[in-house]
Length: 143
Image 1 (cartoon, rainbow, N blue to C red):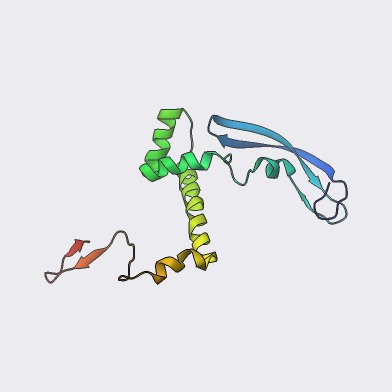
Image 2: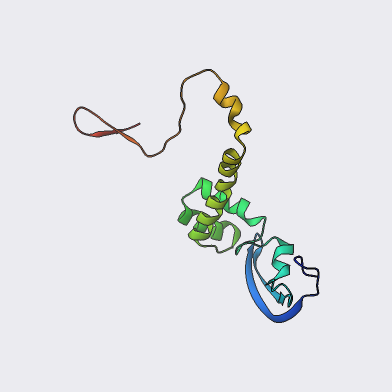
């Protein structure tokens, strides 16, 4: 049934898709369905399985664990060595970046989450990475 108008969806074609899971690559065969009334179309199986990208829902957590421990290219090599699963460094990078957006978006969209921090006594705090402080001699010193 169409979620937009409640009418029956019509099958248009079948298509395959490869998905990386924690146990390896799985090949899915699914139907593309469309609604003749409201023109909604897509692969409902993808939504039912929670597939948004090329990895299964539990896989990003494991990719993020590897990406947080090593550089993305080394994480991909270790994943292949430890688990026998091939995944490229860009897939690990994308999983880490997508996962990192959730807390940032939550802090931005829920001002009450930071209210206690803003009300607390103390100086200004900030976090930085890869900085250098210029010295009188002209060189930089990592801080």
